[in-house]
Length: 110
Image: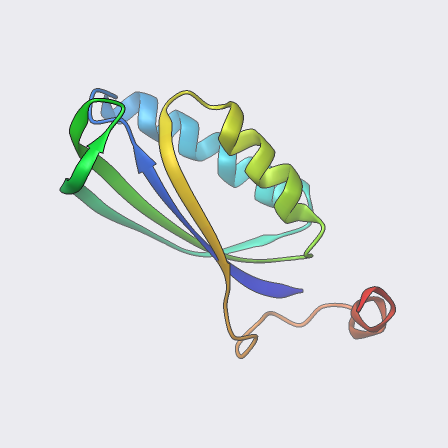
């Protein structure tokens, strides 16, 4: 498994319960597709540098997880479907500290 980080920008109009519900769905996708959530950072409401969907503020959340690379396409597809997420960015992180998985399986997919 490889480590990834996804930064999500949520609508400022979402309630805390709604935002947690959407995040819970994203976490379920990570678990269902064979990944492991390593960290979740809620950065809170921030001012944006430019308007996004006519909004000048947004709620930032960072998810760090270990997952097979094939999971990313399904994860991002679900993020795109969600109307509550304005923008997102997924990056691959250094693999140091990844939970032990099936190394033989990783060699076959690489």
